[in-house]
Amino acid sequence: MERNFKLTCKPVEDTLTVKEKDGRFIAYYLTEDNYPAPPENDNERFLVHYHRRFYVTYESVVSEKEIRQWWNGEKIPQEENYWIFPLISYIHSGVYLYLGKQSNPTGMGYGEFDTCHCGAIFISKAIWKRRKKAHMFASSLVEKWNCYLTGDIYGVIVEEFDTQGKHIKRDECFGFYGYKYAMEELEAMMK
Image (cartoon, rainbow, N blue to C red; front, side, top):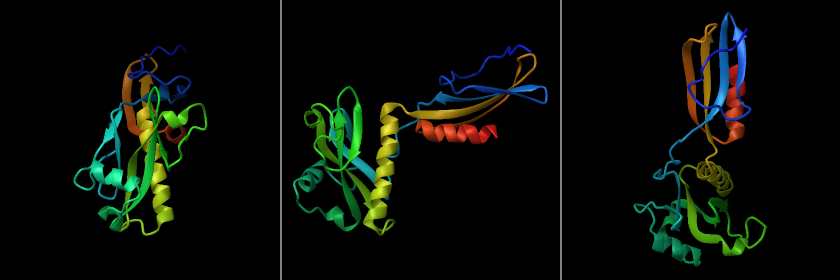
């Protein structure tokens, strides 16, 4: 039987699967998502960064001047309530974030010349009591931001069509940061 139906979104290449069930066609696929940036103003966890290509502030908690002082080894009042982790960015035809202070995070080429040391991640000590756990959460926040900055955000779409190609219904779930996580959700929906 010929599949004569039109999908409502453009599938990400190689993610479209069509199954026939009870006289209907069900299409499962990923589509790219223009999801908004991760939240910037969450008192429990947030990042700040001060570069013209990637500028994120949270002035009610910390100023750019305080971040510069902290990077220069000075104590700042926020250390009482937050675990603070250094955040650097590799800026070259885009922005990619790294947790830590390494001068050449990519390990390639002239990374030290394209690396910006002007950011930090704040994790609430009231929520995350141990630095090690807070560091793990900070790493996941960096991963989420990198997905956003590189456009690695997807929606999972399930559409049903009758045998004539008429659209019956559509289920969707958007905001998956990372192809791996989106594919896991897509595979779960196909079961």
